[in-house]
Image (tube, rainbow, N blue to C red):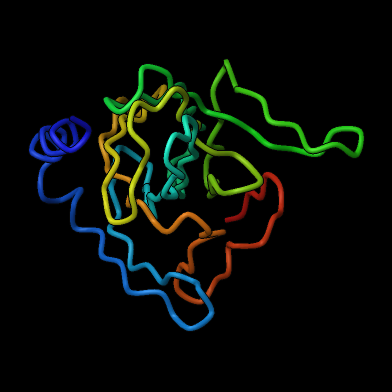
Length: 183
């Protein structure tokens, strides 16, 4: 059933969103990605991925990079996916020396001229009550809803369960740092 939903979503999204190419894991277990860039208004979205889930697992995270080349802030208001009825934008942060995860009901601001990475240990998409566990090699369709850029459809590649981060060129985003916003 999940495969059918994914195939229908893939047909709707089209070949451009499916052009993200992934290389095999290297000897260190990292995955090098050559991301296709999805553009929506002033936003450039790249590197969409998620992890494979264990059988019976009902929650998962989604990760990507959003660069705002515009002169005005934009806000990721919500996310949806046909693989679950409930998907939220979340933040993990250390509060009083304790790691806490919480939804961002007002969305995630993408400041003008900056790049915000949704990654393990920081901002991320949260899939809840997933009907069928994500399997390595599959694609998970999502729709990101932005205040200015509108709805953006894309696919998240399902990477191995233990993946900590993606190697985007020469940058290592696999480390746990919280809420990085860089130019």
